[in-house]
Amino acid sequence: MKSKTHAYPSVQLFIGGEWVNSKEHLEIVNPSDENQIGLLPVVNKEQLDSALSAAQEGFAIWSRTAPLERSRVILDASRLMRERCEEIAQSISLELGKPIRQSRLEVIRGCEFFEWDAAEGQRLYGRVIPSALHMRNLVLRQPIGCVASFSPWNFPMSQPARKIAGALASGCSVILKPAEQTPAGSIHIARAFEDAGLPPGVLNLVFGQPADISEYLIPREEIRLVAFTGSTAVGRSLTMLASANMTPVLMELGGHAPVIVCDDVDAASAGAVSAIRKMRNAGQVCTSPTRFYVHEKLYPDFADSFMQQIETMKVGDGLSEDTDMGPVAHLGRIEALQGLVDDATERGARLLTGGLRRKGKGYFFEPTVLSEVPDDAQIMQVEPFGPVAVLNPVASLDKGIEMANSVPYGLAAYAFTHSAANVDRLINEMEAGNLSINTLEASLPETPFGGVKASGYGREGGDEGLLHYTVVKNVMHRIGI
Ligand code: NAD
Image (cartoon, rainbow, N blue to C red):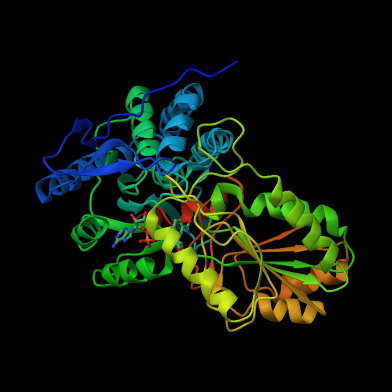
């Protein structure tokens, strides 16, 4: 049965519990056909000041709300989002071109983030330190305050969800700036929280030019934490801005995930699952498996099976039920991908398939596979963040690990092997915040996710995820004097 068609939501700022508009707007475009689907209000400085005041007022209420009650509101909002899953998923597919089946899964994933954090927020335990007679030393974890959060466009619902969930479950208030290309997920989240009875000012949404907003908000003393997901270059500049005030940061930045395929696995199965995972969300995932280092013994079978899978993929409009891969998010991504592919082939890489923008409307870049890519090609260092895979044969696990670690990034890393000895080496030697073996899943609500090296610091998810949203207070209490 065909699903009901929902309209793209009206995008407004959400400040102090009110929906407000703005005089200036940017276009929101469907990357599948380049048509305008909505208008994004550009926040002005007075509205940012209002958001800061509202977030402070929100914090005063929310931080004093019992954790059980905070959890109830978050769970109510999550239930509403589950009920509205189809509407939210359609908005995501319209603004990002993501295949609708993947958009539905994203909505559910976002709800799971809320549900895990809602429960975990009730367990922000401190401790009692054994002390001298008549002395008590209590260690408490208290909400850090008002958080400035910045979420990217590649997961319009689950990325804002992760940021909002961590903050709200810990008792903080938030001013969130979602990505300008994909605001709808955050609009649906804010609507659900409004309907669930979240006090005004606890969650605020602002939209506009990213640098204008971050440069205004981050230096303000009302902001006690900066949480960002996006590129390493932007993360670095926001970290420098925050350092002027000694404001802590939570940085989830780029990745360039390696996959080591050892000689003891079924090459055809590993090749097939790798191709599907690589092209998920048109490769625009910070954990996307990209640099495949395949043992030379298995390489031909792995590459054959990878290619067979790629050739069956249907590329098209995100709203079509049978689409496997949609367009990339914006024109800038096409230009970046073309540059990386051309550079690799000029340096001697073999282009097994793809490599070009598809003719006609929409920002479609063909699923692309490069093989035998030389080490000096830019793509071996620069994250493509798109539907481009690199397949390179390696002679040993030593070489695979050396190449895997040869980039500035260290977010997700993967391996296929059944050998306990190989796994032991991978655990000890891979430079990554997340290592997945025989699965290309890198993150769950209950597991801590984040990077090492230029992939940032801090963790989202798991009980570690809420730590950043709290500060530790030690209370030393002498009974009587
Ligand atoms: P980009 O760095 O220009 O933008 C990425 C995100 O950062 C956008 O959502 C944008 O709104 C935000 N941003 C940009 N400048 C900002 C500023 N000064 N202050 C606050 N926010 C700002 O890159 P792009 O071409 O749109 O995206 C591709 C790159 O982004 C990739 O190379 C990838 O590393 C990174 N990215 C990473 C993730 C992730 O999950 N880690 C997600 C999306 C994008």
